[in-house]
Image (cartoon, rainbow, N blue to C red; front, side):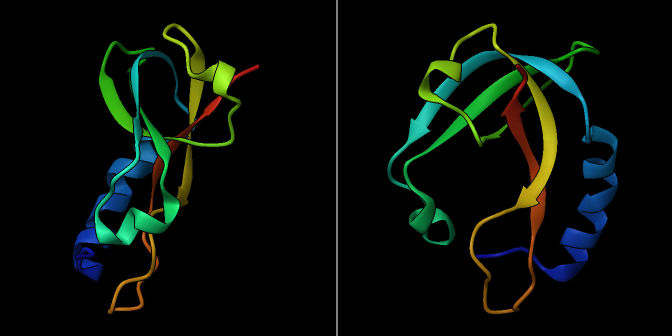
Length: 101
């Protein structure tokens, strides 16, 4: 079930404040069985990250090599499409992570 356009619009303020932040991987897991809107994307990796301001957030890890899935690896937040388009035909974007060199 996708979110309503109003919830997506409200979430953009949170996402905007998280863009471009750097942090360190605290933990990771690979998802092999996912909800319907993400099932075409399996398997995918979700990581828990400690940002530079000491706050913790989690999200999908993208554009990485398997060797990048390591505790202590530096990552950066980016904005990417989230899941498949639902019945409302609203494209939802969310914060995801990419490895830093």
